[in-house]
Length: 88
Image (cartoon, rainbow, N blue to C red; front, top):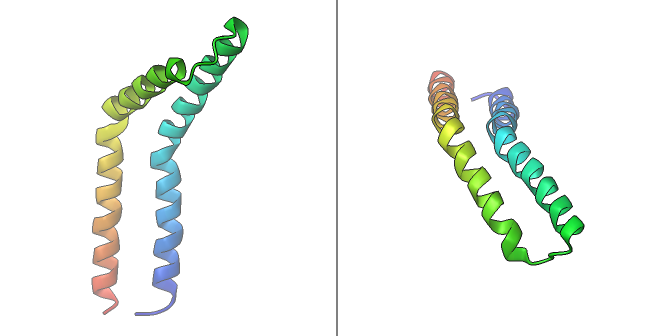
């Protein structure tokens, strides 16, 4: 196995991680910002108030983008295993 393959797989893995994790992080960031603004405006600084909207956002993103994310990760793993088997 050449030294190019592990570094290429690592680079592609990080890119895939950013692509798959982007919707989750973006949704949680947006919901956290809105909840934080509402808590600052109403002066309700209870951590429990912000927990439920963040959990619901994570569940909704997982519901809508979960199949796509699993498919992308499965394609990456299958491709990586195939490329590694060719270099042995």
